[in-house]
Every structure is written in structure tokens, then in C-alpha cells.
Image (cartoon, rainbow, N blue to C red; front, top):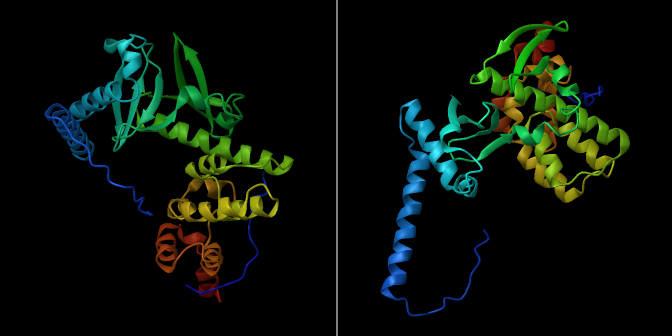
Length: 295
């Protein structure tokens, strides 16, 4: 790919091994049995994590059981959650929803029983609580018979309801989070609000944060050089996906071929990543190539 030096198009709208001394001590037969048992359980859990059953029903059952055993064990033991009314549904590969007794999705989890995001938590985040992020993502949420239903809207009119057990519902929340992060990012820049590692992690997680944003946060002293250096590496994990993200394109802040050249020249990405990005982006984002073709 040719190298160019365009101006940065920034959004305007906004082991080491720890060596410890070995302590020799007598281990009783009982202690050995306990250790062996724990080891076997851990090995089983590791296997189960990697080799979930093939049928959707079995996957859902296993994930629900793991949720009960792992990080919601106390809630189930104390009957804060009703075993019969808690439900795990497979949404797509590596994504499951977990519902409360009332039929609302509480959070989305992956097949390693880790929370992807918790709806009860994110609805209190800036620009989600006041519904602005939903508006930008073209969704509206309505409480009907105790269930929070999501509707897609166009031109301020409800078009169709979204099945709460569908990939579209999951994507709706991803879009809402994306726009909430965009608005939150702009607010922080406007008011010079310092950010920590957690803030930047959340921005990058939902793809609305670009290398240019990271540079601007550093320039305005909103993050430290240490945070900047760390998140440059983390940004490399999402850059390929950003290159084909239609939301960034609609916001007129896409990743173009000329941007890739800048990232490469600054050592933000390597040659292999640049090639992957080039292949992933729509043809009309290949501005350098297209210009040469026209010339």
C-alpha cells in the first residue's frame, strides 16, 4: 500500500516468573486427597470450558449450572434467585443471555461464564440513562407487562419490535453502548476530564475509540504516557474490526487507507495488521488506492 501523509481526520462531532522459596512440609493423606480432588475439578472445568456440548440446549444448561456454581452461587443458595425461573439462552456463538424471574435479560455472558456486559449496570451509564444513546442508535425501550421490550425506530416512528432472545437484541445493546461511549468521550474532551485505565478500556471495548482519540487524550493530559502506551497495544486488537464498522462510517469517522499508513508509520500497527485492515475495509475507504486509480 502506498504511503501518504494526510491530516488526521479526527471526529468532530462530537512473566516475569515469580520465584518463591519452596517450603517443605509434611502433607497428610487427607490433605493429598483434598488437593487431588480440587485438581480434578479444575481440570474438568477447564475441559468443559473448551469443549461445551454440541446441542444448544446442552450448552444453555451447562452455562446456567456454571453460573450457579461460580459467581452467583451465594444468590442461588440464599434463594435470592429462583432456580426454576432463571433462564440461559444461546444468542449466537459464545454469547448467552441470562434472564431474571421477570423475563428481562439481566446480562450477557460468554461460554467461559464471564459477563460480557450487565444491562442492569449499563442502563445507569451516562447517555443511556437519559436515552440519548438509544436515540442515536435508533432504538426505543418500553416497559410492557413488566418486561422491557426494545423497538427499532425510523424517522421517530416505531418500525418493529426486537425479539429479546435474538442476536438483534444483543446487537442493539452493542450499538447503544457504542454511541454512549462516543458521547461520553466527547463530553470528557470538552470538559478536560481525566481518564484512567478503566475508562479507556470501556471506550476501546465498544469500538468507538480510535488511535486519534488516544493521541488527543494524551495531548490534553487526560491520560498518562503509561496509559497511552498500554492502550496502543490494546487498540491493535480492535482495529481490524473498526475498519469495517458501518457505524464509524455513518459518523464520518471511518478508518481509511491513509489512516492505516499513519498508524503504521507511528508503529501503532505492524505490516501484517495493516494488510488485514486493508482487506477488511470497504473499497471506498481505500482512498490512496482509489486516488491512484483515478490519476
